[in-house]
Structures are given as structure tokens and as C-alpha cells.
Image (cartoon, rainbow, N blue to C red; front, side, top):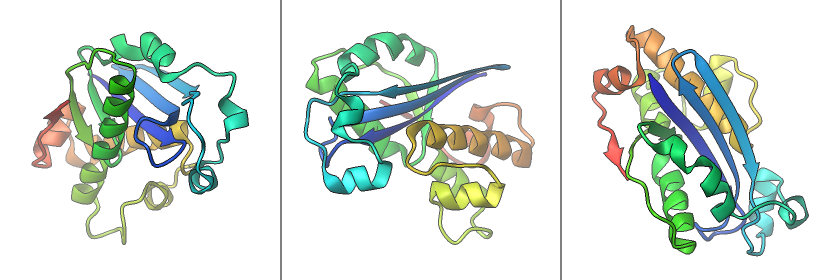
Length: 182
């Protein structure tokens, strides 16, 4: 079983302004945890900084998305990628790839927001990561890209236990969900 969870934070309202990515690669029993600060070469909106706490000063000496992508792109091969509210994170990924005229990979992806809605529809008042973290009794630093990606892993793991399945794909299928292709 191999899958990746990701979460992006953006500098402003532009989807191609990724300033942080949290990424957890689960490969059977091995877990590879990565966090990248990214220089988006764009101004930071005060409203975004209020959410995630990242400023231009924090990222000015860090690589651009293009440089980070060179390091991580091969991880997406033969992996299913999950994110909480996946349409947003996939849009950020596509926008950043297009901004730098990079090759857009093809991979399947799923949404942990949809998993949580199916698993705990009667237990939760909303399906924000902070609410789910409290419900699952997890330590969580909301809008920290790595912390959010780690909660996504836990949603999948708890879901597999609840549904009594052995892998993420069986969980998705059992919940009546279908992976999409980027």
C-alpha cells in the first residue's frame, strides 16, 4: 500500500502562490514526512498570513516551487494522492506546475474530507481538520501544511480500522467513493 497526503498553504488568493507544502508518503510500514517552505515570488496577502503565519521573510531564501517539484515529482508516480478538500490542493498543484511550464503528471487522487463525511456524518458538526483532530484526539496545528497532511493520514488509518479494510483503495471503494485522475 502506497499513498501520499499533501497540503498546500498559499501566499495570496492566486492558486500558483504556494508558500508551503506538507507531504506524508506512506509506503507499507514506512512513513516519509516532508515539509517545504516555498518562495512563491509573489506578495503575501495579510489575510493569508493571518491564517498560516507564513510571511515573505520566512520564505525569501527558500527555493521556488519549480525547485521543490524537481525533488518531489517522482514520488507521485505509482501513488494515490489524498488531501483534505482535494479540489483546492490539486488546483494549487496544477497552477504551480503550469506557472513554471512543468510537465503535469497523471495520478489518481482522493479526498479525506469526503472520507470523513462518510465515516463520521452523525458524529461531527463540520468536517474541518481542526474539528476532526479534536474528535480523533490528535495534536494538530491547523493551517500548518505538515500538520494538516499528518491528520489526513490519520483519517485514512482510522477509516481503514472502522471499515475493517487493509488499504486506502479498499477504504475509498467501501465508502462508495471514486478516485479522480489529475
